Image (cartoon, rainbow, N blue to C red; front, side, top):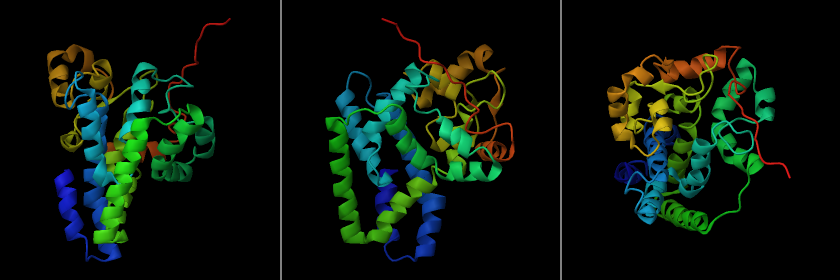
Length: 272
C-alpha cells in the first residue's frame, strides 16, 4: 500500500484539482485509511510480535508516511488504554465529550460531526486525557515532516494535499470510516461492541471483527475470522452490522442514536 501511494505521487503530479480531490476521496483516502488500520495492528505489536516492539515502531513510521500526518506513536499511546479501560469517562478518549453530544445531536449536526471526526479524534485526547509527548512522538513528527517536505518539493503541494486530504476525507463521511461508529455506538440497548463481517474487512485488516478483537487483542486481524469460526456460540447471536454505509446513514438519520449513544463508566479509584 505504501508502494502504491509512492507510485501515485508520479500519477497525480500533473492532474487538476478536481481529479486530485476525486482521487483522494475514492482511491488514495481508502489506501491511507487502510494504512491507519495497519498502524492499529502495529500498535498491538502484531507486525513483528511482542518480542520486537522497536521493530513494530519502525514499521509504524514507514506505514505512516503516505498518511501525511504523524499518527503512529500517538495512536498507540491512547488506543491501548481504550482496550484496558473501555468506556472510562476519564481515560477512554474514544468516547465523545458531553460538548460533542450536546452540540451534534440533530441530523444536520451529526452530518458535521461525522465529517469532523479527524478533528475530534485529534483534539479530544488533549482535552480529556492529556499526556506529555514522548521522544518517539517527536521522532514520528520529524520523519513525517521530512517526507512531506520532500513530496512538496519534488511533486508540488497539490500532490502532498492528495495524501493529506485523502486521509482526512476517508476518516469522515466515507464508507470505510463507518467502522468508527459501528464498533461501539449503542444501536441496540445494552450492547457495547459490534462486529461487521462484510467485504470491507478485506481492506481494513478485519477490524470489523471487533468483538473478537476486544476479546483477543493479541490475535492479528488475519486470524480473527478463525476466532469466530472456532467459537461461534459466543459471536453468532450478538447484534452485528451488515454495512458500514448503512451504519453512517442510520447514525445520522435516527434521532435515537448520536454521539451520546455510548456506554460511559464512572472512574473508580481509592479514596485517601
